[in-house]
Amino acid sequence: MERPDNLILVIFGATGDLTARKLIPALYSLKNQDLMPDRFSLIGVGRSELTTEQFREKMAEAIRTFTEEKEPDFSRIDSFLNCFYYRKINYNSARDYAELKLEIEKSCSEKGIAGNIIFYMATPPDVYVTISNSLYLAGLSRESEGYRRFIIEKPFGTDLASAVKLNRTLHELVDEKQIFRIDHYLGKETVQNLLVTRFANGIFEPLWNRNYVHRIEITSAESIGIEGRGEYYDSSGALRDMVQNHLLQMVGLTAMEPPSSLDADAIRNEVLKVFQSLQPIREEDVEKYVVRGQYTGSKIRGEYVPGYREEKNVPEDSRTETYVALKFFVNNWRWGGVPFYVRTGKRLPTRVTEVVVHFKQTPHHLFQRVIGKLAGNQLIIRIQPNEGILLKFDMKEPGAGFKVKNVNMDFHYRDMADVRVPSAYERLLYDVMTGDSTLFSRDDEVETAWKFVEPIQKAWENNPDIKVYGYPA
Figure 1 (tube, rainbow, N blue to C red):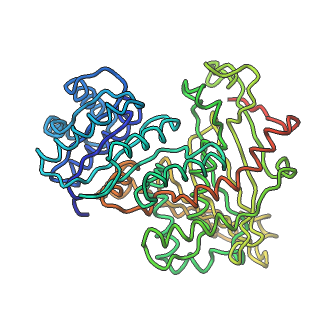
Figure 2: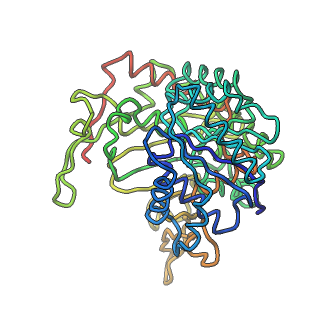
Figure 3: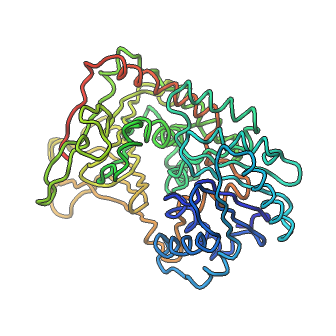
């Protein structure tokens, strides 16, 4: 892996949780692997009253607290933070952006950086357009010397209309190739390994179709609740928060055709084709193909856990779903008739994200009389925790007769002692620095995904008779 070109990273929302927990520790890990530019400046921008020195101290604490390194090396923190600066800003003030521009130009001049700038919006979505427009008016978004890249966190809109409006507004200010819509799920090593598992192995791809696959399940379960984010979560829910982005992207990578190359657009074109092939769920059929639930209060190991409606900043009559499950089909030659099941929820018995490919039973049940119904073969791609791949198949137990047992062929990344698994943000930040947009959502992907989800949103909004099932935390 090569070092990126010299650049300046400007983080809006630099005093927030995302910056402290994910972005700065990821950048420090890249620094320790010598994968940061030779000349680099980070300008933190926020609404809090902080000095540069206070900002550096806060970021040093974030690195020590939230690093994902197994054996962290903190010896380079001080030298790393010497290139950090902080500016307080009013997001609506043209004067503040003019001063930010002067700060950027000063940094470019002093450090000999040729004008490569990345703007990271680690802010609430409602200020994306305000910030982008202000940067445009300040002359900071036009590419002259060097590049300008914009990283935008999800959600990319709240429905189809808002996503289309956001994309059109951004396109009036910057080109699509400058926009990196970040989805941290796609930065996980095992998600990327989906491509390698499928397209580098002659044993899987011939079976990866309707002739051999019975069904595919994609699950993202969390054991935690909403963690004090009642106000945000109640306006979002599991469908917007997880399905439209993370889980549909995983459907795309699981179901896509082989790309012509590893070029970013070649891969994203194939994911888009999957989204375009999703059989629409009509508004009147939503109750048949979609289930939503909401966790209720219960005791876990003797301790009472509040239900969703008892959480802070959640209305007592809220119908926001904390669990959603869908059944749908991909209408193309490869997957015609194969059901896809996608589910996600909070306060479930375990934390796991995985793709499970269930293969069809053998056409002649030779051993059924001996042992009863055989379990089908499964390929499990585990994304978190304990990233790895598991193949389940049947073997004969030693001894007389034909006693068959289901066994696992198991691989975990953690077993590779000499290989380090990077954090998702580490990989994604490096990709933005090097200009690789493979793992970032394109405008047409986002809009097509919203188009699939829209009838579900409308059915829930227009039909109060559709149930919200309670399930104990």
